[in-house]
Structures are given as C-alpha cells and as structure tokens.
Length: 147
Image (cartoon, rainbow, N blue to C red; front, top):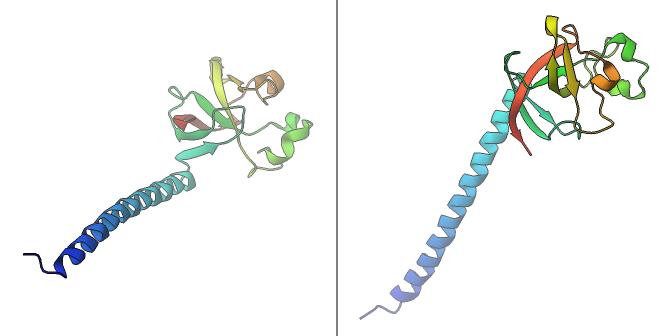
C-alpha cells in the first residue's frame, strides 16, 4: 500500500529533479560560454587573436601566425595614403592606435612585399594602396573561426 503523502511527494520530487537536471545543463552551458568569452577576451587583449566584422574579409576570429604560414596580414597605412577619405579611423603615422587593416594575402614578392585583396569591390586593398611593405605590417594571421 502506498502512503497517501508518498505518491504526491514522489511525483513532485521527480518533476523537481527534472527541472534541476534541466537547469544544471543550462547552468553548465552558460558557464562554458562564460569561460569561452573570458578566454577569447584574454587572447584578444594579449594580441593572440583579432576579430573582424568588416565585409572585406570574412567575419570572425583570426589567430596569430608565422609570416610564412599566414594567409592574412594586418597593417597600418603609409603617409601617402592620408588623402584617402576613409583613413581617419585607420592606423597610420598620425594615428598609430587606429584600426589596423586586415586583408587576405594574394601574392608575396621579394623583400616581404605583399599584394593583398579584400572580398568586396570597394575594399581598401592593393588596388588602392599598392604593395604592402614590411614597415606597414603589424601582424600575421590565419583564420581561427570565420563565418
């Protein structure tokens, strides 16, 4: 015979355990995402990872790479590029802390000169800037997570 208080108690506890179990997974998911966000933030602040959201390169995260294995490069503009209307936000001699330009490496010339390309027709790339010289280069990158 089932005690009258036992059945509702067990029914309630079974439902409560299900809720607890569900919330444990939710909490675990939130904790994992929090750890990922903190780790990515640390990597970004240490210069190991950069993010891109401009349309001229795939949106996502890029990880630092050796020059010979890099498929992307970040760089600052030269002084002769200051006449370009959009240079105000970008890194150049007058604005060394501005946004660095991130582009795909298309060709490597001698003395580390690079031809770079963007993924849109109006991209600020070698069609406008010419060769990217070693003095302009600020980082070598490869995609980590792009979409």
